[in-house]
Length: 372
Image 1 (spheres, one colour):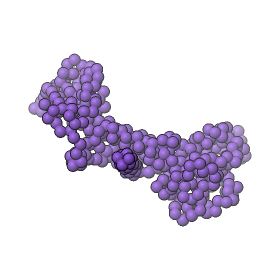
Image 2 (image 1 turned 180 degrees about the horizontal axis):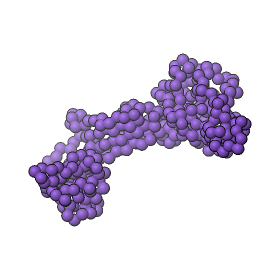
Image 3 (image 1 turned 30 degrees about the horizontal axis):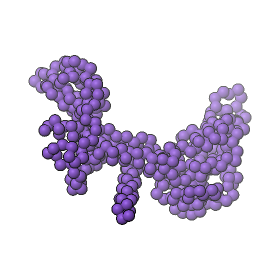
């Protein structure tokens, strides 16, 4: 019975492979086990535990679900939670060495700090050049590089190119009809570097009343866009729209979203002395601790969660029969790193909403089929 229980709940890591990797929690697979799905039993067993939340990174445990649901949740985080990204680039002047197409592609990959929940999707087939305040954000980039004529025989870019005329971030312009020529070009300074701090948000319609200065901006202001030399200039206008990563990777709200199963390490024998230290070296730091008890050193499992499951211990004949490695089948450790567009806890909440919407749509389809 204990063997069957392990098959149902754990993945076994062996020296040359894995065992029990398939799901078997459907009714009738094992005699004596009631695997019929029950809502009350699911509510009792399912839980989410937040382990760490720091800045744009979130680690949490999702316990009591099947791998298919966990993977669906991961895929939703990657490709179905919407964000705002640069979709259209109107190039009025580009004399830099970067081709127009490459420049437009680089701009599209810049993460934009804007809450997508405040905007609508653009209508399919809409071809108008001007967006609406409900579905479009507008940015402008207008920069040029000049040479410092007061330097003689200088080779340092910081001395060659003038930066004393570089302007600070301008306040949002309320009326954009006269753009792009109404905003004076910024004279860039050291190294002629054009970064995301030079992007200017141009409110459309009543956006200046809805959003404060600083609400709409690139996530980071030090992302390099291009490098200019004296006489070169970039003058472009950009439209940001709402989209999902399934359409293009630039809309993905996460830098990474992954999960792994919770490791379980069992010592079948007491390991002491030099063998205990050798066992400690076989695992990631902190997994195995060596305690000194009455002058003797004994190994114990301290933090199995930190193990990377390298199976290094199975390479040693004097240790491999003393250790059993498993992974808990329904305990998923999620790691979510946001691009900075939205906090990671908000992204997880939005992903749950998307998954619930898919479930409702599926139930609606089943009902329609049943009514036919």
